[in-house]
Image 1: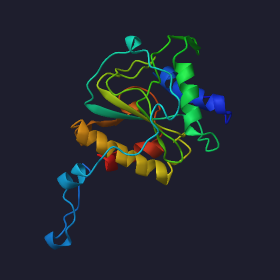
Image 2 (image 1 turned 135 degrees about the horizontal axis):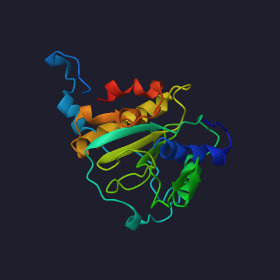
Image 3 (image 1 turned 90 degrees about the vertical axis):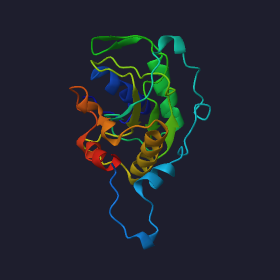
Image 4 (image 1 turned 90 degrees about the horizontal axis):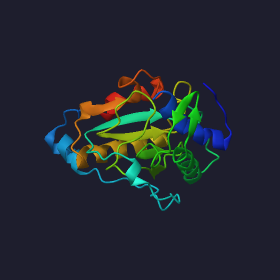
Length: 214
């Protein structure tokens, strides 16, 4: 696949990954320690801090071009491009949305104009979470992959060759904990994209984190 550190190419690669290829069990603790039980830990999961759509200056979504959904599972992606800490997450999201909402062709595949960014959440290399498409609407993909009923989370980076940053992992755990609690998602229903489609996404350095999230 193409690799580039160019900012626009980097944001393009986030969308390209979609188009081209497209419980946590607590240890036993003595009662006197006061440690939270698994159910108490879930109850403590609130919505993590994130850059909302207004914060990254999102264009209004075209909801007529999207399918509604009820979230029952979580799917993880990576951007399939090297992380670029020098570009603000807000700018990456703006570039991604502009591309997603324009018609075009990618490697011979015709891409329609989507109603919004294809993911519900983006986690930058610095751990910042950006709000993407509304969870009431299914993500978009050109691949042979059923996106309805899924919360789509993408992490910045190529996790074939990079490791997720500590900040990304912490943010991912907080985000997944909140989604599991609010949407009553069973831990077994957390997947890497490649578990649902024949694609190398996300890379193994993220896939190996999935058991901890469950």
